[in-house]
Every structure is written in C-alpha cells, then in structure tokens.
Image (cartoon, rainbow, N blue to C red):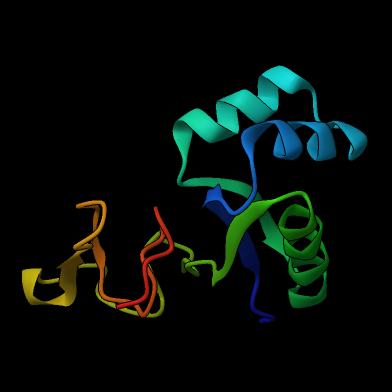
Length: 116
C-alpha cells in the first residue's frame, strides 16, 4: 500500500495581509484563510501522494504560511493503526519552550515552528 500524506499549516512566515492576498489568488475565500489562521495548527489537505503534498505545501509556503508534510496513519480493516499500538507514552511528548504547545517529540514545533 502506498503511503499517503497530509499537509499541516502551523503559522505565518509573512504578514497576515500578504497571506490572505496570496491565498485569495489561489482561490481560497478570505473567511477560509481567516479560519485557517485561527485554528492553526490545522490540516489543510489529506490523502495526497508525496508529489501532490509537496506541490500543495510549496504553494502555501509561497503564500507566506509555514507548513509541514506528515505521513497519514494507516488503519487496518478493523480501524486500528497498522504502524503502532496507537498509544503514545508521556515520555514521547515535548513542550515547546517558545509557545508552550505540547506535542509528540519532533525537531520542530508544529504550532510556532521553533527548532528544538
């Protein structure tokens, strides 16, 4: 089974007005852009091939948004995660020293982009 990916918006790397203008040029209504900003981090698109995810992420980056690409969890026929038991222990979490967001350990905060 091929891996599928999702694109997650975390925050802005340019000004809010620039982001909204650029997203509008991509066909995204202003109220949807505002909703993305309010709900960040938020999944923008799911079930993409890696190439599609990269193209989508590049467009958002050019619009002034910070995004990451994640492999989607794969579920077996019973709805259980194939890749793990689905339980993450507390030792696998980290809190961002910049914004206080708690997340599974990674190299970058998915909310503010802080590099650990």
